[in-house]
Image (tube, rainbow, N blue to C red; front, side, top):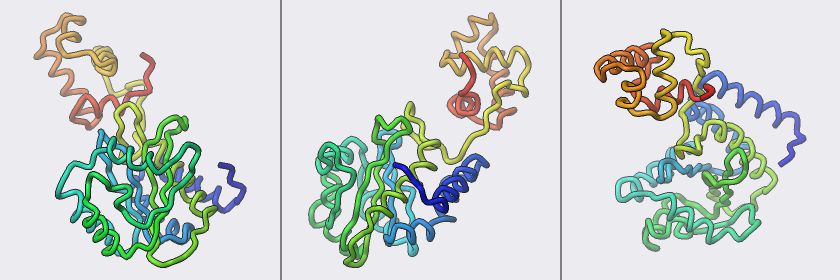
Amino acid sequence: MEIKNTEILHKIIDLQLCIIEGKPLKVILRKYSDYFLTQSGSDIITIYMHENKEVKPEYILEKDGLIFKLLKKYLFDKKSFRWDKFLLNCVTFFPSGTKYIKITDHYQIFKGFLSKREAASFTKELQMKSAIIMPIFSSDKKEKIGYICFAFQSNIDPDMQKLHTVKYMLENIICPLYCKEHNSIYSKCIRIDEEMTFLTPQEKKIAKEVIKGRSYPEIAKKFDISINTLKTHMKNIFNKYNVSSKIELYNKLNTLDQ
């Protein structure tokens, strides 16, 4: 999508700077919630993301907290919210080439999670008249990683150009934080220490093996050290980077040449 409005382009730059500065995604969305709602003309914006085989609608832009309460009441406390099933529901209503769908009842996307009666109650309590749903694609545009739902609580004709623009803006702050390999969203931008400046020469060698996915026994054998010695090194490495697991360490150092 080509954006020519300079005000919008400047806003995208501002949002991306917030990401680069390490501000948490939820904080950014909360700060700019009124802006996105006003720009889109919608009453509620819900971002349904694929995270570890589940649907995580944790990124919600609204004024009164209503949809979060309803999602908790009808979905979170009852059952697993599986991504594959949710995706199938959405794909069913997205013929090839379709950029958006319009719904008037949440049963269309919550089928298999809620009964028709529950979905009708959800929609009624939300006071939703209609909603526009658009897919979110990965940075390479090859994979659907989520959906944005613009909900309207009054009978209006949505301005589709405005919705596409807001969707584009949100994609630009979400996609850089999305990890396709692990189907997860980093809560904020992680600054990488490419030179591993905090580590001793031995710790650097060990850290590089950890990044490659080597097991502790494999690493210990390669460097001819005991498991206990390796664990001591790993404890020191974790402490220096303020992490508590190998996956967190990977996220800190994952741009290193391997």
